[in-house]
Image 1 (tube, one colour):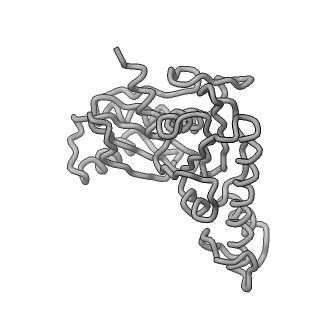
Image 2: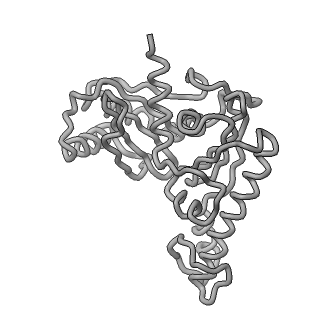
Length: 257
């Protein structure tokens, strides 16, 4: 069994792949910057125990992390409780996709892992959208190389900023209200944020396609991907565990004999 871990700024996602490549278990936890190695180990072991997976079945672990402060305790926890030392995936050490940006080593590991997963699912050229803490639009050229990314504020971050800087606006569920013209406060906020994200998505896809190819496929991931995808035809596919799949693909490439 291969354990893949995606450490994001807000959440940490785990995925367990069986020897046939099936994703047999997924879990999400809050990314906590002060969690100890034992806390990581006990938490992850509890997930496995609840799923009736044996800890000893984990033969390898690979991690993508954009929060360096958690890397050491997470690695120690995985090694102590699962008996394997995890490999950290980075843009610099991966073997699956060429990165043709000005500073390839600085590209976020999650962006590259998502791009690898996207090519595996839809081929190239492709646009990879992740609706997370930030909303990112990764571009993969017709040659299969990672060309770059556009980074925008994430939907939840935008909502938090709006509510935090106004006296009377409430937190709302990020769902499409059914009309762009809000008739109350909640509907008005939802209309501006959700349909604004739809418009942003359609325009950036249009502009990126003009650079990498008009037939570029569009795949999305992230917690709010289904919300935006339901309101536009430009997103062809939603894959909630795209980064985890990309980590698996790169692990297999690195260990292929």
